[in-house]
Image (tube, one colour):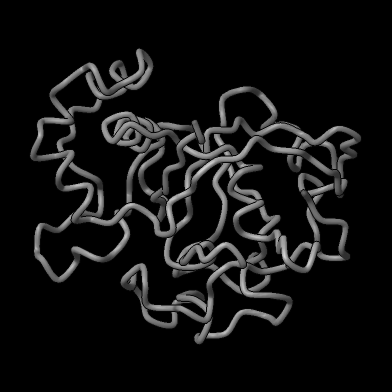
Length: 236
């Protein structure tokens, strides 16, 4: 996990090895059609799906759907976009799953178990093109979650780069052995236990910020970013 290439940011360093328990991760990000089920079931009105902090956020911000939302069926197979971390967490509980840790997400994106090595991008080491994923404002909006089969990871996951950022369960903090670069406040100022990690990238992300190790971070209340999520569940 992590990255020590010349273009890696300080919060991606150093590389380190983790061993994870076996888990199942969704092949695709949660779609608008799937999320509509949560809305229509009263997900925004039922406290049982929300954490204490999430319900407090909802009481303070009485919303009833994601920020970038359309009920039109043409968007059914597009990823849900414009949700806070709290909304993502509530949906995951609703379907009996959870959000992935960033380590679980990164393993699904970069590890090639057959070759026994890590990939820079989900599809391999070739730089992103429009055959791999939706990025760099090329289309100007989200695309269906299964639109880029050439961008699959070794585990068969789609859309791990491009289309939408993805919330994870992890708090943003430095890896063991972290060293600030180019200055102390660049990343370290946000290791405050108040920012959640997002992985991947969106349809607006430039290529220089696209790699499986890249880490984005925001307050869990943030909805304005082009963020969605996918879910995981534990093996029993």
